[in-house]
Structures are given as structure tokens and as C-alpha cells.
Length: 391
Image 1 (tube, rainbow, N blue to C red):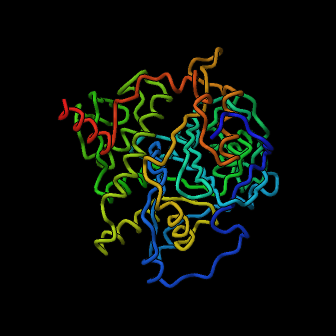
Image 2: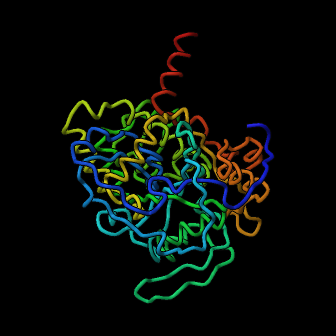
Image 3: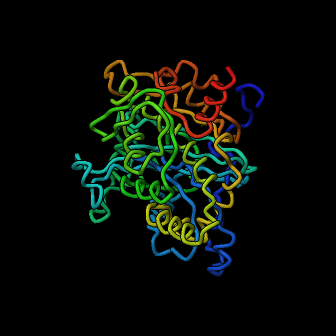
């Protein structure tokens, strides 16, 4: 990318609706053909606050997948969508305590989005950008539909926490809030909760991570010594949720842990050889499709397989991780506010399908945490070992 300036910027940005630009469902493939053509890449994988995980998909498991009709809920009041082959996906981790998630405490006024990432797949489908939105960011929340049974709208809110959008209006309000902040139309939506995240990681056989320091956090139920670990689902959930076990205890520090975990998860998916075992392939497909909620244009195995094919060539080194540029709010040090001049550069880069410039994050509070280098995946572990051997 040449510099930080852009020409012809519009809210439209030129992006693709992705799998089904026309909104029409493609003719279903046979189960055998789907299985043969299925790709194995778990995208933004686990960031969820447990985690947000996006996953591979195969077989006739459509019945497992929960879908939400985002387009019907939001109507036409959205950023323009100009197809160019790129794709933007809101990947969200919900902190609901319903069902199997009850062991992690009680809902405090309703479920919120504990983790939010915008995943941008470039036009060539060989690179990706992930923009993490801190949940404590104060935003101007747009009007959203409230409880469907009530049929009412919630009025816009000034200085609302970003993660309250999900609580107010569910997935549609979360998408609308991101689109309002960014001017980028979300082509798709993916959500995972605590229980789904854990199951997915356990089905993968865990994720290898190396910690340079001990991490102990009773709140997230994490107890790790320094060293290399094959993290279970419970441990992985603890790692991406911990705030007080390592670093300054901020949500910004936790985001860096989540981003490191996402890269390690992608490496794990690429290394396990899921196609070598029909049982492994089926178990993983069954878990992945049961673990996620998607928009209605991704709520079938065929549609998810199409997206997985798009993502299969992207490796962890091909992903640029960015935290939305913020500063601590002078009126409340427990909240952050956007640095408008810098966030504009981030969203403009996504609209123009270019990497986020370094100048967009320089000086941001998200770049000044003390988490860097505390955790790493397989590649980081091997690099450190090779460096030690070479000394």
C-alpha cells in the first residue's frame, strides 16, 4: 500500500456480499460432493470471550446451525454493498449464561458481546485483516429493534458501551452498530458462546500455546505455569477471557491474548489433518455447526462450505491483527473512546481492501499494553527454540 491516503473513498467501499450476492440460495450439492469439497479453516476462531470461532463445515449438518435474518431486521438503511470479491464478517463471542453457560455465573441484565472482531477477507482471498473492537468502547449506538415480541425500537444512545448493542437488540443491533461506526457493510455474521467454544477446541484436540510467564486467574479459572501447553477447551476459554491473570488487567491487554490465540488456533486447524479420518472430520463438522449462530445467508452447510473454500488458503502469517485505535476516557478510566482520526484510517483500509496502515494504531492505548510476547502459538514456540539452539 502506498502511504495512508485514499482516493474516491465512499461509505460503500466496494465490497462483496460474499457467498450469495443475489440473496438466492444455490442449488444444494450432494452430501458426498460437499464432503469432498469441504475446506478446513477455522476463521477468527476463537477469539471469543470466550471466544469467537468460526469454523469449518461439512456434511449434511444443516439442522445444527442456528440462523438470524440480519438483512430483514436491518432493511435498506445500511452502507452500500458493491461486489468486488472481498468479504467482511462480524465475529462475535456472546457472554450468555443460558444453558450450559450457567456455570460461568448469572447474566447481569442480559447477554452482551464479550468479544467482537471484524474479519475482512481481501479480494484475492489470500490475506485477511482482523479488527478487534474493545467491548468497553463508548459509542453512539443507533436505534435498534428491541424485543421482537414487543415490536418496539430502542432509541439511539450516546456514550453507550459497545457491547450493550447485543444486549439491546441481539445480533442485528450488533451488526448495525458496527456498520454505523465503520461505514463498512457486514456481509455475514458469526457468533459462538462459551460452551460452543470449549467444545470446538476439545474436538480439535486442544491448541498449543507457550506462555513466557505464569498466568493465574481464579475468575476465568485459569492456572498455567510458564512453558508450552496443549490447552483444553476450558483452559482456552480461560485464556481468552482472562483480564487479571496477566498484564495490567485491561480489556485491551486481553484482546492481545485473544489475537495470539486466534493465530495459534488457525495453525492448529492447518496441522491436524482432519481429512485423514472420516470420524475426525464428522466430529469436527458436527461440533462446529452446533457451536455457531450465523446470518441466514450462511445457515446451511453448503453456504458455509463455500466460505470455507474461500478461506482455506489463508494461514496465520497472512492475517493482520489490529485493535481499534482508542484512548482511555478522561471521564471514566474504565472506558475507552475512539481516536477518530485513526479509526477512520482503519475503516477506510477495509473499504478499499488494503492493509491497515501502521500510522492508524501508533499511539493508541491498545498498542501500549504489556501483554506482547506473553503468549504464542506453535510457530512462536519453534522460533524461540531455534533461537535458543542457535546461541
